[in-house]
Image: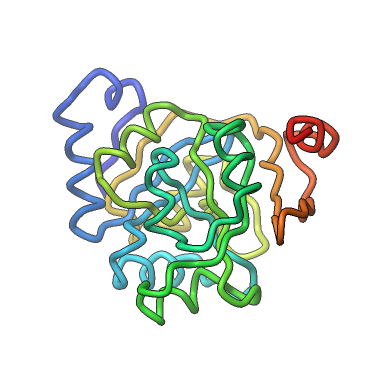
Length: 214
């Protein structure tokens, strides 16, 4: 596992290209995002997606999180976006709003099965608030699947030492920024036929979401 600091990454274009190359070749990258370390992989690389879930020892049935670099990447995730969901994306991305959307039909079935969990064909998607991370995704040109850097139902995703212990053998690249201070989770929203339902309360208040749509 190669380790670099966030400061080194931000100051060195060669290291920035290395992150993209690692993702492009099917590797796993761990990095800081919104007060937690996250593991990311190329969504369209089936082996990388399987490697991520195997490293997590994931057993729970819940939709996975996907980061897109901007709204223009949404067609790579879904071809059935509710117009109201699109409106929310335009108003609140980048930001801590995760939209549950139906997955694209041409995604490999094994990937769809893993990322949709027990929610049929849904996946959570958002543009990360972390500008440099959104830029990495845009330059990769494809969405990335995202998972917190901890074992199933266990903590440790704010601690570099714990991440090395749990994932040192699986990770290809670790961008470290010391011990992190946990931040509020994103608000998860599902939109069906224009009706908005907050699935998980989070950083964006439900009332604010509904007022924005008036």
